[in-house]
Image (cartoon, rainbow, N blue to C red; front, side, top):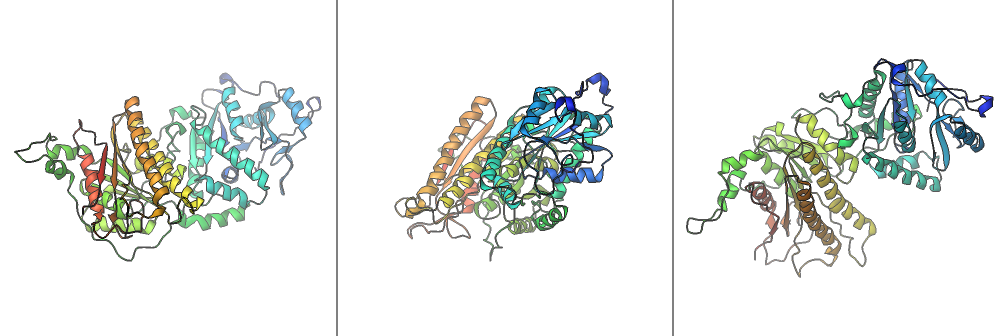
Length: 578
């Protein structure tokens, strides 16, 4: 890290370290919020902490100062002793530990790192905000010390991109890379520790990350207590980590599309090369080409009609809901997150929810498909302000964590009321005997892990708002003897979805969260792909059967949502008729 303030470590009586009496200043010495707090910055190696810190120091060197850490690792090319680190021997480091010269110290990646009291005190004495770039172990020690500080965690968009970024630095052996990746996983787990970090920034876009980081840094500079800080406008700092809400840019206007800044990644990489920084992990990219034709939209029943249609005739009355208008109003202006919303079943579900006055967050990876959906919505006369398209990969946890904040920016005070887990993949090279492990992993990531992450964050958001909701998972029915022999692994993932749905229903009941959980399992569905849309299937059902339409699945979703409060629609199976 490029520091403008370094503290020599050459006091003879303590080896090469300087002792500072009373290095941790108490409340009386600091004054009531008059002096800056320290800023503790953590995150996995390669996430881009150095880039953000350098940008801050270059912009305001007179207001921020580094605490230069000590380390026993050898210098890398271009690193200077006393500037980037104080490079010392293991023996000297241990001497300083015994002398109590460190605020915190830990062994990381096989080497010792520590923050001396002297370096922190020197920055504090100059009335600047002290920047501490330390690991999670050190953050725990600083938090336990009681020192006034704001703790921020810089997170990568995904583990895959973090690995690619570390490997791209070409400074690590494969053995060291493996250690750094494993340590990175452990550091990410620290986000679940209550009270450790005040803020999290997902570093998926350089410009956005800078804006968020600068906002938090100025809170520390002003001595603001993060527990008392608000987040009421688009320029507010990132959300507190305990809520697991990563910061998103300000809400787009109704006619704009929310995206993951993929078009800026080349520019950002060039900027990083010019600065000589660590660089940022690649942003999620938009993939796929626009379809050669749009499937005609077939409207299923609306919320007002669905339950009225199943009451039965006068000779065979069935228990019915309140008036259709009453049931419809329950979800009007509520927010539904639909994954895999750019085509097929997901697209149809999104359109029908919009026509029922539900606000829809349409989640998909393909930007051009979401733009097409936006155009279609405008053509149907639907209020475009009720559609929020989000370019997002549901297999990337950091992006899933960002969803509640994105929703809150667009519709202040809103959250996830409905979740439709529709996104799924199926690969042709996934047979059990001859299949590709990569294909299996991809299906598990999307069909099982992503579904689980989305459910977890939806329930957490509902619970945090003391609000009820409905989670609907799209499963799959096996068709019988005409199935392809390679279906086994795919159907295993969908069986997992069914099991997860049942497990979630039990968990929310035990937690007392008023969330209904439903599973809708269609067999073959007619979509633009020619197979079962929920899974991206490509084989055809037998000639004796008529495939289902995506609108049939959408109608089942609306049927679940329109059920009266005393009815829990646990599972619906949809099979094509002979």
